[in-house]
Length: 237
Length: 353
Image (cartoon, rainbow over all chains, first blue to last red; front, side, top):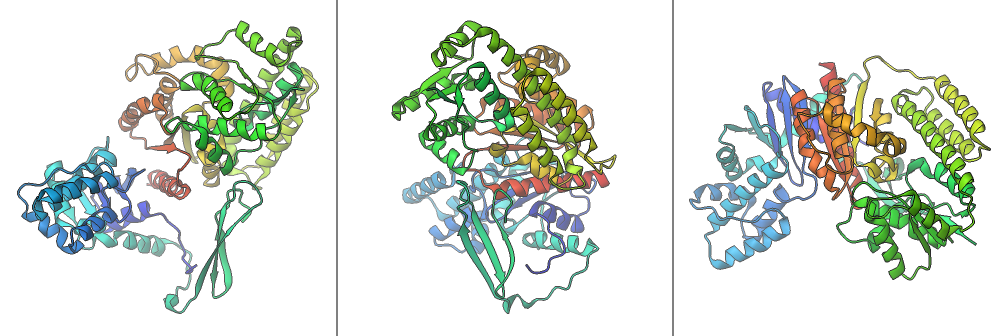
């Protein structure tokens, strides 16, 4: 659509981006808005990875929605968590139940910072139990993704793992850096223009009724010209 | 008038229909191909936490009843699958579908006597001698199909004219469904094996090789694994898969003790269904230097859940990556695609460095 010369998924992009800054990294912990992943690296090659499979509990979206509920800015969330001396236990296996637990604890009158710290800790524990299950987490460890900006989560990662965890200053941009590197390495050159603002994109969804799959087809138009359409199971479109 | 139907699984509709048509002399209502609608119907009437194959088979049953079938034949065993028949029969009864339900295997067990009794419900006048003859042909057909499929899986990723393998497979299955007898079948099998070998492929020596292991229905029904094998083939990967019907019917009982011996440092007792097999296969794939392993199962498949930690342990010991998939009626296709792509990228990176 934007004349990209390489199409890569986020896991590869994240790993390559981080490797550019920390060539000897062994474990990448990544928590983003909706997904979280762990990438294991040996001698600069990805050897294994895992991604959250079912639930978004313990990702950025969960933290930010809870911050809103407590009337806090996400940016002050982490700093507040650091103040707590007695983090609350929160059942964070599932986002929905975590929220009701949180409401309950808030009504009981727990201090805000304790609740916030409890949330940060629950994200860490949930991540390690869910995504990091059965994986050897070896140093050096890099923690990245949007949530790595949260000092509270970082603190509890260090505490629970009992290892040094590095959070990058631009941790939330590693995926973009990786994509840029992949694109640079690609031998096919394409002119890329930053005219996204002026381009007009239109997406039209259509249901195909040829069989009972009823696939939802997506058609994307750039300046009224059809660029791509996808979504069919049979491969007709 | 008996109009028989059966739960669908992959391409095995051809031998099953052949058997029903000839041995039992029933008119076969071919179940419609599995689509999103099938699984929607299946999930609607199934218990919530039953494994996904139950939902798929129930869905095809209902769809074929609506198409006109009045007799359903169900067969299966190994794990919970052995009890599917009873539950599905009850569900169909509760839905007020008036059908004859022939459940060839009950409580996970079966005997010739039971099969004969159930078949007599469908066709009281069937000839045992003929049934034996056609069963023999059907078994042979399954064997031939599985052999051809193994060849296809190894090579389809490297075809020069895209679609050539699928086209030939399609015509092969069409011919198989119209064979006249055993010798005709053998002749056609030999013809098509040669034809498949003639198809042009461009296969590098160091291509990526991936082994697929896991729960049997999800492995064998491409719709339920979101066409995993097809996606892999598009990325030029050689695929090794062990589970097929011939294996389950004839090789499994002999192989399981061997498997247990082969992987004895990891497993001592069989764990139900294919769990022990998959653990031994993991070791085999690791020792044969496969680049990666993909383990697929339907959600809530208990034997495979038990096998998964052992599989990760073996793979860790050999440093081979494993990708676990758990398919459900509500799995997001994009999520699968992302994980597969990343897996493919990772294998490529490991190989080139």
